[in-house]
Length: 409
Ligand SMILES: [Zn+2]
Ligand SMILES: [Zn+2]
Picture 1 (spheres, protein in one colour):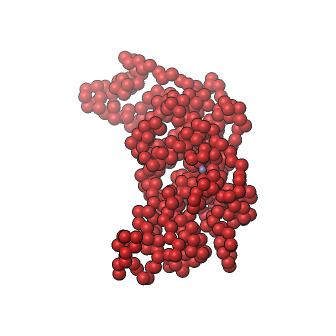
Picture 2: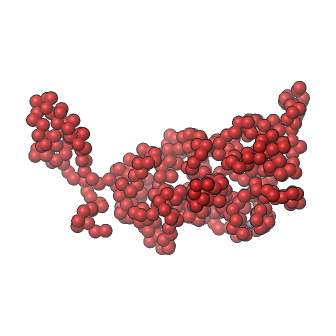
Picture 3: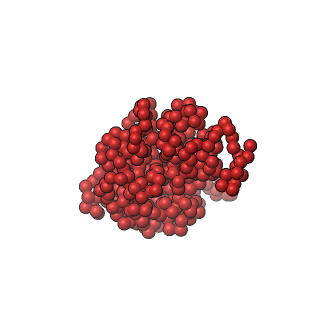
């Protein structure tokens, strides 16, 4: 059956009638925020929207809906709201594929940059309950307040519009921001619009005035650059982002993970603390603590340090790493992918050892010499491989990080 609506021919499906309150996703709105808004607009609980209206099991809400595209869910929402599939598809974190990630996030396990939602049954300590963030000034200025997709990214620490720090908790009771769970366990819906109220203390995040803290200018500028990069997919200013932005974000994550680590990399934090006359902070308890699980204050400080390292790349990075005496081996992580722009900077700026051929290279060079009339002596092999020999002197690299018995720690 076809009917004319606002001059556009649209299909009408009597099994999936349009909702009484229909609202398309706002700009950069997350799927969970959109669904919560639809439920509140239709005066039903979010769980009712998921089960009675959309026909899913209650288990649907136990998953992180923003993480992986559920085509069935998106399809049913499109039919009930009357928006396009592209509009519905743009609400998930998966739409960052090609901008933030090379591939769509995995169904299970940690995902770079995505603040984790839910608790792991295996290790509760590693999963943070702070799953999203907000800017109260943005919510207050919205004609229809909603939660942004961008706020679920761990790299978001400052509001690019207002230049103030985001909040990862309620400004009054410091409980986590769980806008979608405010009607859980309620028999009746509250008379006030609950999505923008704290489920724990009931304070209004939009209409009460909160003391906001302005972020330093360079951090605001860096955050705006990152936001622009997530739109454009490339940047001429940020290292490694000239062709594909995921290459830059992959390297930024490597740097942040090093800055976050205990052990030798702690010296980088010591350097910044001394330079800026601040107290040293140790955000991580163990080496496996992920950046995404840190609280906003710690992430903001680490982002500020990463921004410092990226200035006039790679000179400032090399100077700071040398001054902190953190050599290339501490930056190298063989378990994770490292983009070439970062690898080459670490190699050129921090690697100060001379070339040392492996045993296989030596035996291959010896075989080659024997096949071509050589004697295969150690000196000949050294000459062929370009390391010091009787006839061949190699200028040694300048050591910036002296090791061995006479080295000063
Ligand atoms: Zn804002
Ligand atoms: Zn609260």
